[in-house]
Length: 181
Image (cartoon, rainbow, N blue to C red; front, side, top):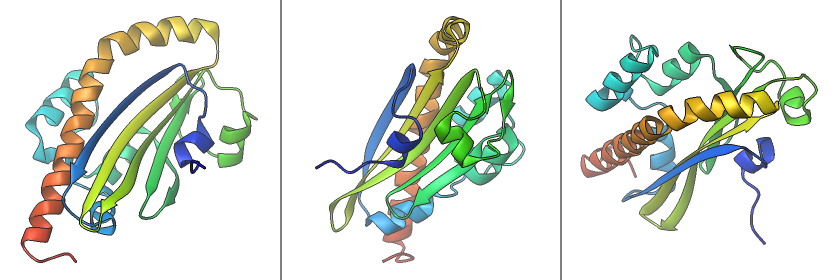
């Protein structure tokens, strides 16, 4: 029986998606702790891509970025998964009620969720993945967001791969330095 993930709970059906994964040579709890709030500025590529898209770059931690861009922390299941999201009605808005998001109680044009999922492969080996799911609720948003996604998706993918690399590097350096288990 497959375990239901938070991303499946919040957005089981979606119009567009993006998925990336990486194996980290550290125990799951340590990787989870690093991934909760890593420093995005460790990647020059991320900083460049954010500037090109007009995204905030002044504060560099993941937590700050999520707050600055208007995402909402939805839920976490330590050390296995955490998830953020937002909805557009017609602009990006913080989610005010998780129940409304789950039950579609408030009409939105687009719903987006983004997770980090952690799976222990061995005692000191963890697979970390990140997935983005986008649901276009109105037919016109499927067309307009589809055009936008076609242009942005490759750069979004590069950003996610860079994030995973930062998590891997930071986790493995901390382990090497004996600062983690």
